[in-house]
Each structure stands twice: as structure tokens, then as C-alpha cells.
Image 1 (tube, rainbow over the protein chains, first blue to last red):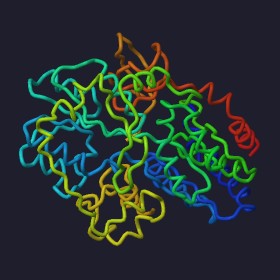
Image 2: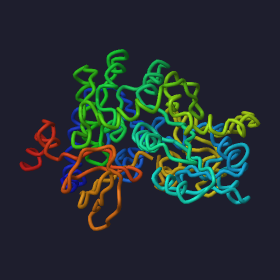
Image 3: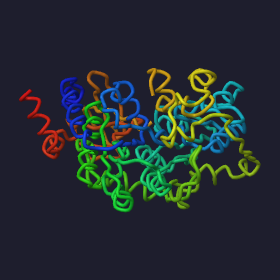
Image 4: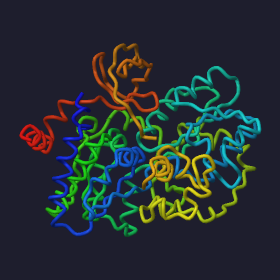
Length: 359
Length: 74
């Protein structure tokens, strides 16, 4: 594999030089990525320090843990407190809500278990006689793993789907006058959906996009490709991550998603409702949809929305505010006692900024 | 969350396989891909989500070649 080249400081310096040369003729350029793993590479490798002063790399709403609505977390806590076994990815455990976190519920005795993937959740269901509900979070990368579980029609198992989709979110951000000049699209979401779903956004809003891999060299190359597009006034969707993203994506995975899920309007934490950006389990699979399967319990669930104090996660998710600009950052909001979701997840912008000491 | 890591398939039995990540070996689900032993895949939450193709990567992006030439020259 050629990862050595993509991590080679000499190669990255060459790219940085090409970026500097190109940027001389450009005004202030703002590039947004929408992926926590991209932010991690950017910050951990200090890539922002290699960019010219007029090129800004900002982080958008690309952490599924951060954008999962409080209501759904509270719903899972409610189910756990009614005796069901809950399985969840570890990052969700400490996300705060106004009625505490899943970890708090676990400390009170609820049966909440951390899993690495949905296969572990299915194995737990097989072993236990109790009902197991899996917290189905994640973007298109994770959705087909939920589809595989649904298609296996397991006993005593259901999913609460809070799956969200990226192209619809990008469309929403652009429609709402997001002031960016280029988008770095998430590589592993694109492994599933391919290149084409991004094209309408580029056409409609004249925005340049590059699908990027996750090595430092991938990101630098993607920035360079975007700057080439911008200086040539092109608004195309280009694929830098060719080794893992095909033009049409992964057909097998897409077919499974279509069989099991349908698009619905959906809330994103700290953002408004985004049309068609959620994936609900199709009626044919309602026996494995926690909302239907546990309707009796959930009919007593009451959710009361309360504003998240002075937390600026909303602006951080939209790339208009940095973690350092939030009054809570590093003072009262830390990874050990997070106030907002961006501080909890290892892919949250504030968590990454806190750990690596820059934003 | 969309973190996925590359590995090589060293065993395959039905919809499951063993992937080697530079020495560490784990069972992964292969439901989402058409792959054979010896193929490289990227794995997300225990599922192989796509076959990796370094050949495609090398042949398809002109910019890589340009940078490569610069590097060789530099």
C-alpha cells in the first residue's frame, strides 16, 4: 500500500508549496469538510499550519454522535429504564441531555452495553432472552450494517434508527447560504454512495467539491484539487479517494439500504429539521423498528426540549465559530465533564481541539 | 464514527472472513462486498464496506502523477 507516500513529509511539503503558489491569486477561501475523521487528521497532523493565511479549513456537521438529537438519546434512556437491553456505540454513552446521559442511566442499573458494531448487538440478542434495542446512529457508512441486521430478521431485536444522510445535509447548508467556497466530502460515506449524489449540489450552488481520503496527504491533495477548481471557476465533484470510492459507490450496500430504509425529514441536534435527511425503517421491517416494536412503552415517553445553556455547538457544527470562541470551552466544558456533544465524541470538533491544543 | 481501516482478507467462509491488519487479525462480515482471499478491504464497525484498489488510485488521478514527478525531480 502507498500510505507511506501519503504520509511522507516531503510529499506534503511539495503539496503545501503548490497550494501556496495557487492561493496567491485568490481571495479569502473557506473550505468546509463534514467528517470528524477528517478533522482528526487535520488537527493531529497540524495541516492548518501548512496552509496560506487566506485558506481556511473549517469543520461542518460531520460527527453523527454530535448531531443525534437529544430526544432520541432520552428515548433510548427511557427504553433502558423500562427493562430493555440497549446496545450503543461507545461515543454515545456520555452525550449529555437534560435528563442525563446513557452512562448515568447505566450507573443507575439500566442494562446498557457498548458494542463495536451491530454484529455484537445481534450476538447479545441471541444470547439473551430479553429484548435488545440497538441505537442505530451514523451516516451512509454505517447504514448498510443496520440493513444487514434487518434483513436477517432476528428475534428479540430492534433498531432505533437515527441514521442521517450527507448529500441532503449539504443541500440544506448550501440553500441556507453557508458561506463556503469548497467542500471536502467524506471518503467512507462516499465508498457507499459514490460520486453522483453530490453532483446536484455542485450544479445548483456552483460549489466545488472533492471526495477525500483520510491520510494527511489525501487532505492536502484535496485542498489543492479544490483550489485548482476554484481558480479555474469550475464547480465539479472530483474524487481524490479513488482507491476506495467508485463512481457509483457500493451497489450491494445501496440495494440493501433501499430495501430496508426510506428517506424522511429529520432533526439534527443543534440544527433545524433537514428535509429528507433521515432514514426511517421501511414498514415491511416494522417488526424490527424499535418505534413500532416498543410502541406501548414509548407511548408514555414525554420529551421536553430545553436550550443547551451557553454551549455554542450549533455555530461550531456550522463552521461559523471555533471551539476557542465558545465561553465554555476548556473552562467548564472538558472531555471529562462535557456540556455539549462536540466535546464528547472522539470525532467532535471541541474534543479534538481540546486534546491537540488547537482548533 | 465513519472511521474505517484497511486490511487484507486472509480467510473467507460464507459471509464472514478474517482480515489481517498488519499483524492483528479479526473476524469481519463480508455481506456488503464481493471479495476473495488476498483482496484489500476497508472495514467499518466490523463490516468490510469496500474493496480497496491501489491500482485505480495510481492510474486514475493525473495529479498524483504530477506530484510524483515533482517528487522524483526534487
